[in-house]
Image: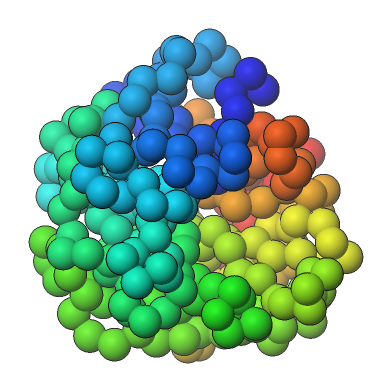
Length: 281
C-alpha cells in the first residue's frame, strides 16, 4: 500500500478480492478528474490504478473530487463522494455501477446533503429495518465548529427523504483541538456493527495539530442522539479511517501522515471486543 498515493482510503472486500478507492492525492483532489480503484488478492500486491469514475465527463470536476466510498446495496455498487455543487458549496453525491471496477455514473439527483450546506465525507448506513441513511460532516469552512450529521435517504439512494439531524460538534468532544484557523474539524465518518451487535462510528479530527481517529458508540445499537465518545484509536497523525473484514481479520485502513504529498494508506488489525474497538498491538 505504501506505493499508492491516495488520501481517504476505502476498501471493499468481496469474493476474495480487495478493492481500494481513495482521493487522488496530487493537489489534494482538486479538479483531479475522478477516481481510481486498485485491486489485490492479498492486501500486499496491488494492481496499477484503474480509472472507475470520470468526473470531467459529467460536469463534476469543478473543484473537489474527494473521499469515494463504495457500498454494495441491493445488488448494485454505490459510490458516495464529495464534489463541488453549482452554487460553489461542496456536497455528497451518489454514483452507481454494476461492479466494483465501474465505470460509475451519477445516480443521485444532485447532492444528497442539504443544498445550502457545505458538506463532505458521506458514508452509507443501513439500519436493521433496511432503512438507508447518509452520515456526513457539515464543514467547519461554513460553520467554524464542524458537526457530524445524518439524513435519511429514499430506498433507491437518489435523494434525501427528510431533514438532516446534527449529532454533535467537533468541539463537544474535550480531546479535540482547533486547527490554526481556530476552526474545529469533523472528517471521515464510517459506521461499524460489532460482532455482538453494538453500533460504532469512527471519525477524525485533530489533537494538537495532529490528525487523529476517534470512535463513538451508539446506545441501544441505534443511530441517533444517544451515544458516548470512546478513547481515540489513533494519535499518530493518521485518520479518515474505515473498517472492513475478511475471513481472517478486521482491519482499520486510514491515511498517514496527513500531509501532502507524504500521505499513504496504512492498515492496522482492529480488535472487535464486541462492546469496544481497539487497535491490535
